Image (cartoon, rainbow, N blue to C red; front, side, top):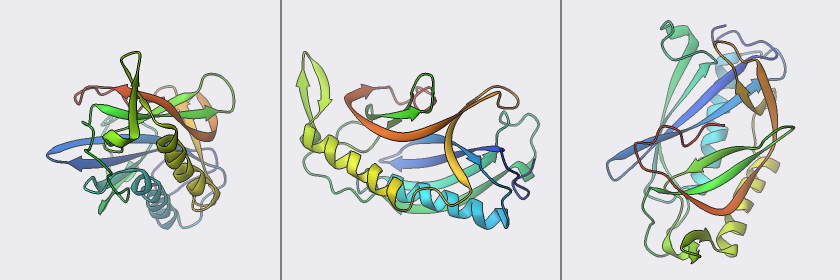
Length: 207
């Protein structure tokens, strides 16, 4: 279905693109409509705006949230149909004040997607951490307890406040070309683990 006609049960992908010192990357969320959505274009713009609010709260100042692409759950360009997605320009900076040197983008904050059932999913966020946020144990980088608490508070504040607009819920979806397995995400939990992923690794923000 095109994004200008949203029915209950439909799944969408929301991809948020960021930039920092010449590098660009994205995080992807799956979202499901829980009702038939009136005024779908307005609702989708609100959906994008609310997720940008979350991402600004956890990314460092200097990281630019460039744009958001909301699309129907279809493989990219199979076939190309402009009515299946919209690109929303953002150009806003992260809001987290850096304390200490910014860590390389390869060092990612690890967030678990607490699934309704089955295995948890994961989100890896680049451009969120500084040297003051980490310590090493057994030669592995880990978040300090204070950094973890602060970042978790950002997710908790968002989930209990702005969250997603009415009529949408966070999910993890699998299957092609249509989703055959859709699981509700109950929460977003910051791990003490810092994941190391190279910049050209495409598999860093999937379920």
